Each structure stands twice: as structure tokens, then as C-alpha cells.
Image (cartoon, rainbow, N blue to C red; front, side):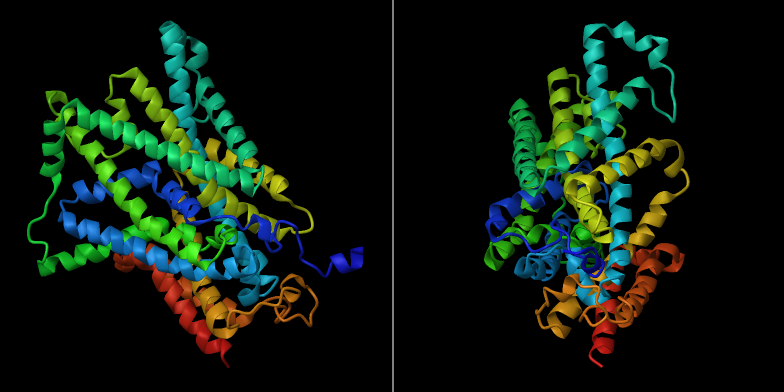
Length: 485
């Protein structure tokens, strides 16, 4: 392609339609995909907290979490089908509704959120690495940890912490930039390994005293007055909370669904999210209830029930189990970081600079920025309320989803011009007004106003869990009205 033609083209080999031979994901791979999404430390804490901390009816929580994941199933099918059909990542399909230039900048929002969260997740991942290093040093010679070199801190981290975060960032950057075939193997390996780890801890708790732990589990269940009308509010709250947890994955789900064999496998795989939820919830709740019962036999542990895996690990006195748990946390956290943050950031960054970047070069940039975010997280970024700004950027996700769905299903009728989707020619279908589709931009901004108001307006904060859906609905409806004219 000549330099002149290159300037009029947005083609990049990582953004073109998937080779049919690479469309080899079936429902079992998607089962692992959703397993990885729920197996995080945050997922463990969220699920167990809903059942235990808030004193809600057990059936309310169960049906609320199932309903929340069913909504994720529906939304993932809607956004996943276009990428499945055309073999394209989400950000390329975004060109159809936002325009070829508009998609570059609106897609960049997904990159900013992804790379920032990648850095934060890497910081917390590095803590597991640092605990393992400290355990290893302490096992050899405990006095070494008291030396001055380990008592000197910079940006809130000592030598071990710095070594851990550098190890974590290099480990992820190198492994995640190999390609999607490697990423598929990581997803499968992580989901199976972590589930085996959960099974191991489940059996460890159960077999330590079957009757005692079973009674502790049953004692936590609250099954009275399920049909009380007052349970409707908590049911909706649980549903929206679970949906909000998964919402960051939905917008860029096409980055993965493009590799699925067919629509039947897509729907089966997405439905497996509910099975993942049930398996994970039961196991996590049993482990937490059993551990809590054992810990409270000691009067010093009568304060509160622990739902965070790292807090539970801190109470264990078995070094082997502690090390094993930390290894499982590293695997789970790294694979979640891959799916939720790294891969979507790669594609959106490549889309922004399609002439210059590849999967590896984009991965290198993400690794560097993520490292900077990670090292400044504790002492600066966490102190200035950075997450509120990330939440505000995240308010774009629902509206972008709404516009894409309206455009693909109702305006374009499922059709896509494979030539013009990469064209910068002003007569291209998706060039619109200078590369921007003004009707879509207006629809997204209107949706963001509604969505972000639940974050910044104190009177509307009770709707924050619904912000994604509110923004999606407003933008979808507005775009449908405008684009049909």
C-alpha cells in the first residue's frame, strides 16, 4: 500500500476480521472466561458480603445475584453478536456508529480506564508477590528483614515491595503481549487452577470438622420471610450491584466474542456465567463461614466476620496453606487484569494509532503506564480521589453500548461495509461529518450526563449502581430517534 493510500486507511492487522481458523472458542472457553471474571479478590469479597454482612434474606441475595448475572448474559449476547458475526473488536465496530475518527477518541476512554485500573490491580497483585518474598526470607533467616535496607521506604514501598511490583509488571507485560492464543491458554489455566484451589480450601474447611462447619454454614443462612414485600428493594439493589460489578467487561466483550465459533456457543458460554456464580458463591460462602467459626473459638477473633481473602489468610497459622493461597490470588488477579483491563486497552490504543502500533508495542506502552500508576497509587493517586474521575470516565461505557446496539440492530440492520469501516475517504459510509457522527456524539453525551449525575449529585447517588443501564437506555433511545431521521 502506497504512503498516500495508507493515510486514507485505518487498517491494522490486529484490528481486521479474525481468521476463520482462529474462531475456535467454544462454550467451555467462555465458561473459563466468566470464571476468571468472578474469581477475583473483589468478587470473593462482594459475593460473601452480600450474603453475610448486610443481613439480607439468603434467597433475596441468591435470586438478586442470579438476576444480575442474567442481565449481564443478555447484554453480553447483544454486544457480542456483532463482533462474532464480523470478527472485529469492539472499537472497530464503534466506527460504524461514532464515525471513524470519533471512534478513535471515544474508544480512547476505554483505554484510559483500563490502563489506570491495570496499574492499580498490579499494585495489589504485587503485594501478594511481596508477601511470598517475605515468607521466603523469614524462613531462611528472620533477622534479615530487620536490616536497614528493608526499613527504608520510597513512595510507601521498601526494597521488597519495589522488587515485587517490578516483577508483577514485567510478568504481566511479557505474558499478556504474546497474542490471543496465549491469552486463551492463560484464561483456561487460570479458571481451572483457581477452581481447584477453591475446591482444596473448601475440602480443607469441610473435612476439618464436617458437622461443625456444616452447622456454621447453615447458621449464616437467613431464609425467613422471603415473600415479604419489603424484600423487593434489596432484591433490586443486589441485582444492580452484581450487574455493576460485571459492567466494565460488557462494552469490550466483542474483543473476545470475535473468536467464538458460532452464536450457539456464544449463548451457551455466556449462560455459564450463572453456573459460575452459583459454584463460586456456594464455595466462597462455605469457606468464609467455616473459617469464621474456627477463628471465633479464640476470644481474640470475636470482632467481625472476615470476607476478604487476604484478611482470612492473615489469620491462618499453616504456612503451606498461606503460600498456596497467595499463589492462587496471584493467578486469579493477573488473569482478571488481563481480561478486564489489558486486552481492551490494547485494542483501543492500537485503534488510536493504527499506523504505528501492534499488540506487542501497545502492550509495552500499557505496561509502562500501568507501572507509573502502580507506584504512585499508594502515596498520591489514592489520596486525591482518582477513582472518582475513573468512575466518571466509566460513565461513558453504558451510553457507548446503547449507541452501538441501536446502530447495529436498528439502523444498520446487522450490516457492515468492511471496506469503509477502515476508510478515511470523505465519501466513506462511516466518515459522516469529518469522521464524526454528530448524532451519535450528542446521544452519548446526553447519556453520560444522566449516568455521571449518579456519581456527582448527592441526591442521585442511590442510583449509582444503575448508572450504566440508565446511560445505555438514554443514549440508545436518543440515537434511535435521531439516526432514523
